[in-house]
Length: 384
Image (tube, rainbow, N blue to C red; front, side, top):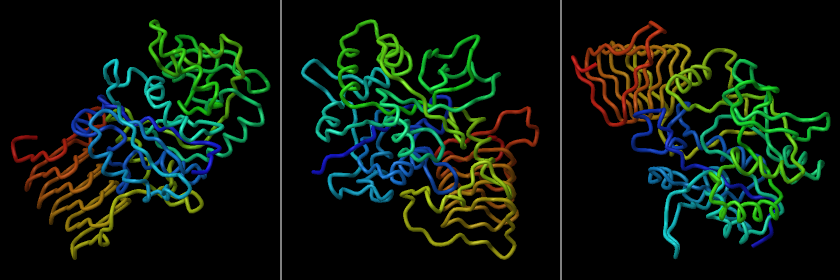
């Protein structure tokens, strides 16, 4: 096994409870997004495109679909050549007992052995539930240039939204001088993206100290970063200015899905030739548009069949829209079925869900909540 300069630890155990029925049976990183992807595809593709081919995926909540989906990482060119690949790292029992990860830092602490086995110079900490395209090598170059102990990816956010984030204040040399988790009165609009590069020795030492601190919440934002700042360690920022979203709520999931559409989308899935977003969606035949089928401003996944009309919507892999059916401003997850004559507006249909004939679901009224149907749910007339 060759020594790795940098490996990634990908936090993918989140429940994503604010996504409601979409995460009832699957972890948030495994939720379908963008027609043929799952949310975790974006971080995995970033790793592959950045030349980081050893990735530990830390799973926890409802991990079964995620485990089968990941395999060994071949779908993202993260194969096992020279010791690379994807390793699934769930919580496990020890002689002192076993429990779910207590926090983001604890998740990595429980897997220090994986880090030490690979003996990298640097460790990249990522979240598996964010949508963005980033070259981590540029962040690593910045880390080395500053001779940093820790580099935190940041991006400017609107001042009125800054209190929702961990906010960083830096000096003229990009060195972090203050970190405040969700401040009431922020003195900066640089938000932490929850993406970190640590020098390995410091990371391991800090995590081991944190593990025995009974006052700690064992979280990178709440505990690790403040402690390193207080200890005078060299903490720096790496500023990112591209598209980045955490689709943590139904409204943000729907809004971000709609942002994929149009002639000049905020997040252009077709403008990534040099850094493609890859997935393990499997081989499907091309989408079929029936003789009376119509599509306008849609992303349509392979294996889909459209006999009715779809406008401004995401039609995922193997979805079906029947004759006379209308789908507008909606997201159909893989295998969703809209039968003949149904009318769907501003809705998210879960995987393999079925909308029976002539059902009307949703509303054009944007003051009303987006309608969400869970996986494998059947909606008949009078049930909407």
